[in-house]
Length: 224
Ligand code: AP5
Image 1 (cartoon, rainbow, N blue to C red):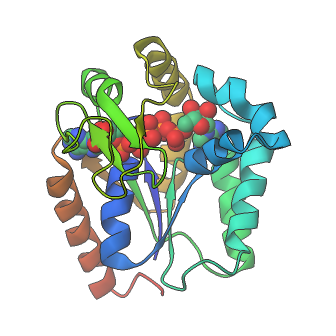
Image 2 (image 1 turned 135 degrees about the vertical axis):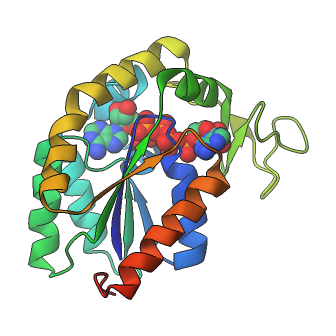
Image 3 (image 1 turned 180 degrees about the vertical axis):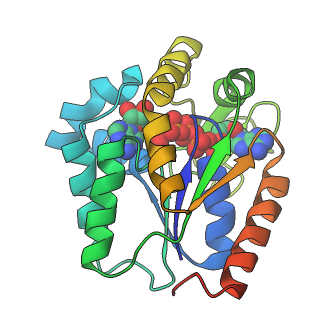
């Protein structure tokens, strides 16, 4: 299946993607993770995009679409499908994604719109800690690591993303709200959009999604 996860910062796209990846063996493609990897390795691209990512503004459509195109042509991808997390973020990106997927005859099956509200995302993101080594997610209230500052899975150091401070989260939310409606309209017109209340806990959200996938598979709408 090819699935797009849409939603504001902190809706839980990354958390859900990790849960679904385990169950469905799909390839998780997060443009945010890819961009941060470029920044961590201080590549020419990483240096160019740093100020956008750290201030909560969007990186250009051309740059992120090229990244997606490269990822989809990589041999590392699974045949089971993809989970797009944080892409598309503009209507242009949504249209470009369709063009790329049409070329390889693997269209999007489902777009999950994870609705969440500012107080919830502020609480989630200001408390989020990420493992530097394996990318596992923790939370200072909801999901504490067993040893402070240390990843339970690999022992790596936990850090706070520079864009996870209150003012930057608010900027990210404004940027999101400015761009989201045309994307929703675009996928709703294709009959692919499913809304889900993402203010609930992660397991409940995942269970609801699994029911949507099952229903879709039974109808024979999802292609391998
Ligand atoms: P990106 O990394 O994509 O950030 P984002 O969309 O703002 O989303 P987040 O990763 O912050 O949140 P999430 O929804 O994944 O939440 P998570 O699961 O981690 O993008 C960063 C930047 O890169 C952008 O601002 C932009 O500059 C650039 N960029 C990226 N893609 C781009 C594109 N396509 N075009 C242009 N620029 C682009 O959860 C958050 C916390 O909450 C965690 O601690 C988690 O444990 C907790 N949590 C999650 N779900 C729940 C739940 N249901 N209940 C309780 N706690 C929960």
